[in-house]
Length: 220
Image 1 (cartoon, helix red, strand yellow):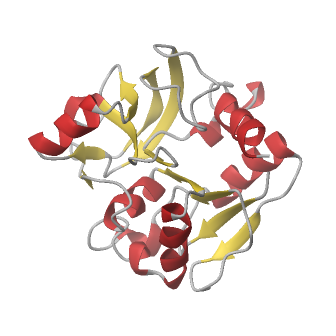
Image 2 (cartoon, rainbow, N blue to C red; image 1 turned 180 degrees about the horizontal axis):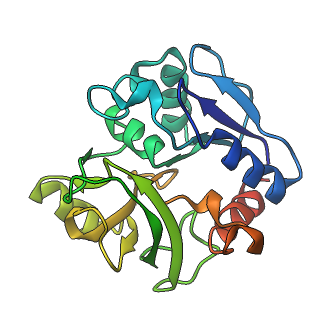
């Protein structure tokens, strides 16, 4: 599997996800600076966590206007798999690849801890390594992780099975306890928790590893 990680100013999890991708695939991902306009030929694009542009204005809003995002959007629309984690999820909503928005946490505080999730959909390249209904523990680290969508959008997401992960102990006030969603084609996933932070026992857990391992299996 060939992959690329988009690096924005103030990204702070780009190397973490690069390590996870290399561990799973045996191949280093391409690190693509946000100011570039071309992407290499890859099977997976990852928008990592961090605080792109210092999270000024709405989180992810400035990053969504980066030159490389035109190519990311084009690849996503062509069916290439795109994974957005934390700030990357925010960028996906701001760029229109996913519906809804990420707002300030309900408690107005930065949340950094492992949280229990339930796998709601295991019929995507990202989630097929899990069982439907499986409970996993993945860390979160965000101040703006409160997922919001209007009632009509929420009903559409729920009715079409596009909620992939749901919080079992909602840390941020997200509507319907949503922790991750996909686009209509199921090739774009945005999630607030950080699977790249739990890929081996030394990191405190392995619940994130199946995501990267199955991506390699599905996209190679």
